[in-house]
Structure formats: structure tokens, C-alpha cells
Image (cartoon, rainbow, N blue to C red; front, side, top):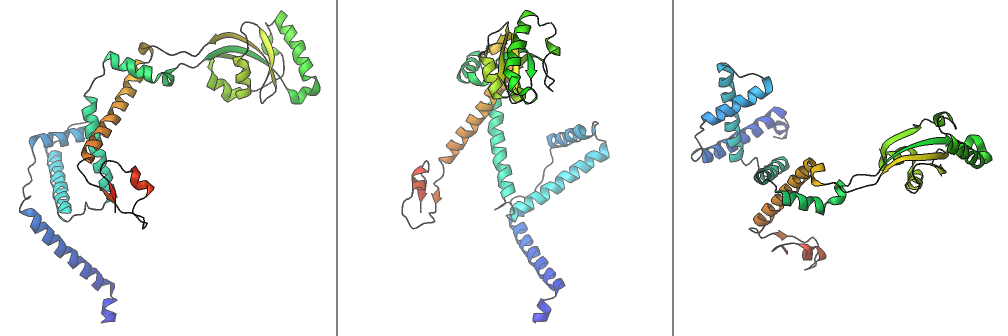
Length: 294
């Protein structure tokens, strides 16, 4: 007997037979209430439209017939899978159904168009997210500390005096550096990325319209002339309308999903089994609605 049970073919046949019996029983129980498949004209149009989106042309009669047969095959196997309970305990199916519920509520939320007052209120409540960054247009002349050593500061002072008198050839002065000599309306983030936070902090405190310095960076010393500074400012609604409408809609969908969940959640009594022997734990106090510990 043991030798027979060790035969792989026999084991396969036994498993296949068991699945067939289970399938037949589930199918028989399910068929009486769910034995009719109707392929509507609307569904055929939807199948044809899906084909057209993929292949950039309308399907011919033979292809439509194939689409219908594929749909029927899918529907038959889908119903039989439900009859066998194959959807139960499947995390992928659970996540997909979860997503479809949220998509449904988001579709409802998207029907709601914002008013001017709602957009203005949203912008005001989230003003910092839309604030325009400060911008600088400036020129810089670099002096290498590693190259000039102890004379770096004295060289910077002498070069600053020269630039104050005449700066027409400023781009040719100083030491070479793989950084632009001139920055045009660069944001604080862009300047920090290139020259570092220490340089940016000094730049924020530097007056405009004359040569100043030296300012320090990770590269060395810089003589700087700020030609234009645009301070950070909060924009008006017309300046950022597209972004505000998009973000308002996203927030609205989140709120709708949360409202839907909270309303549905109230239908259930949830019992969370406590893994410890304590009758009450800190986590129990944090459960919402009518959740209890067991």
C-alpha cells in the first residue's frame, strides 16, 4: 500500500478527482440561481471600444464574435470561481475590491465642481504649499582657498576694490570653477544645490546692486553682486488655479473615501482578539466606534 501511495501519477489522479467532485458540487449548487449569461448590446459596444483603443481600428465581424466568446469564457470561469469560493482569503482579490470601492466614491466626488469661494479658501489654508520661492540674479567671482592659501582673504579684499571701480571683465577674474559665473533668477533651492547652504544664507543677507563679499562656500570664497532679488510671495488664485483645482479635487476624493468608510464601518461590530491575557490593553482604548477586545 505504501508503495502505491508513493506513485506520483496516482497522487495526481486522486487530487484531480477530488477537485472535480468539489467543482461539480459547487457548480450544481450555483447553477440553479445563476445559470443565465446575457451579453447585452452595451457590453458588445464596450468590448468593441476596448479593441479599438488597443488596435486603433474597429473590429470586424469575426473579431467581434471572438471578443464575445472571450467575454463568455471569462464570465463562466468567473462565476464558477465564485461558486467554489476561490475569492475567499485571496489578498489580491481583496485589494482589488477595496480599490474598486474607493474608485466608486472618487467618481462620485469628481462630479462636484469647486466654487471660486472653495478654491480661494483651499488656497488660503494651504498657502505655504503654493508660495513662490525667492529668486536671485547675481554674478560671482571665485577665489580658491586651496590655491591661494593664507593670502585668500587679502586677495579677495583687493579684488573687491577692483570690481567696485570696474566690473566689465568680472567673468575673467578670479580662479576657474565649474560653476556658472552668472545666475539668472535662480531659486534658493537651485543655489543651495550648487553652492551650498552656507553660501545661500550669506546671500540672503547680502545687499543688492554692488559687489559684496567674500562669501564662503564649500568651494572657497566668492565675491558677489546681486543684480535682482525677488522675495518669496504667496500667489493669487489666478496664478496657480490649475494646481489648486487639482489638489482640491484630490483632497475631496480623500474626504469622500473616508466618509464612505466611516459610514460603512458603523455597520459592523469588530472584535480584535488580544494576544495577551490582559483583559484590557492600551490598543483596546484606541479602537474606534464599537470595537472590543476579546
